[in-house]
Figure 1 (cartoon, rainbow, N blue to C red):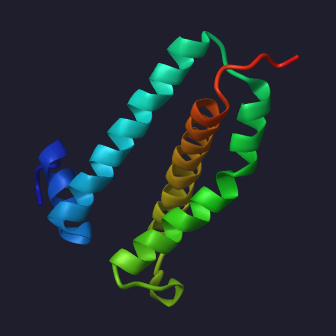
Figure 2 (cartoon, helix red, strand yellow; figure 1 turned 45 degrees about the horizontal axis):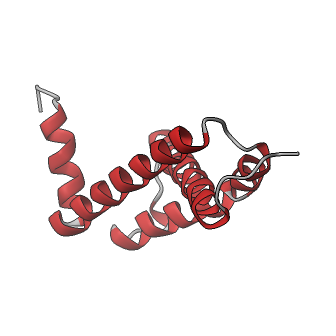
Amino acid sequence: MEEFSFMTIIAVFEEMFGRGVFWAMVLVAAVITLAYLYVLVRDRAMSMRKFLLAQLSMPIGGALAVWFVMLMTNSGFRDIGGPIDWLVLLGVFAAGAIGFAILVYVVQSIVRGKASDA
């Protein structure tokens, strides 16, 4: 592979997860991002209480992301070979943790509504 492009990355992810699951994940991520932007504009500030609970939930999101990738790729920890595999696994954990924290913040903001931090 001499050329590396954005379309190559999309093709690899479609092959790993399947076309339907991959695009469903992209759609869910876009909806959560739009909901997060809506909440930030609506509240005009971040609630530190909601942000703290969102941060505390990050390990759960990271673990769920690693589990999901292992399930979808039919892999296990015994299949991890070299340093790049560990780096990719850490990247998956980090992305899952950040995404889950955003989701938790959005859900709290929508369920509890706008409230002051007082």
